[in-house]
Length: 237
Image (cartoon, rainbow, N blue to C red; front, side, top):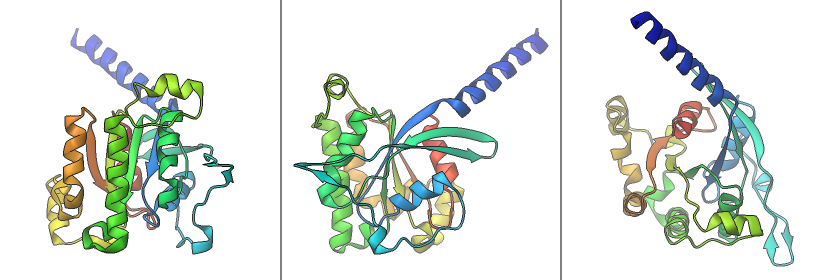
């Protein structure tokens, strides 16, 4: 019986792994300007050494009459330590004039998992830091209040009850802000307690009270540090 049970468990785990490796997952990656969203998008498409993206290649969107055009999602395949996932995500701009596109993209595609990216400027303060905090608050307000815009009848019908399965707050450019405290917390699996996340805690609590699960993680997209591991952690929901 033990042997038969072990075989069944092994078959079930193999079947789950096979299912996960081929089932596409809808992911939304948002954040303000120059936090690394486009670099992450390119890295997930083709891992490797990444360049600093020139200013004239920053993400922009064409405007048709009064609305910006939503970018189409593209397929990526993520692999780490034998685990594989297929995700579809879009590269959406971070300037405040594009923030409504985050919501449009999220609701129209019924995004399952949301990533909000920021960097150490959020903790350092200044205009860029304030912008990053404001962008997260905008996203949280929309999720809690279900303040969505609907581009199609289908998205309107589905959007009224929409909420992501998980929102992950990701501190990017970890190679710039990593310190001894982060190293200790990382080893203790308590990185979420690091001060870099402090400015966002109030809104994280609001999401928890609203029934939207959250996680916190870090990566350094330009050098490919902890990218795959973070994305797989995101998708294990």
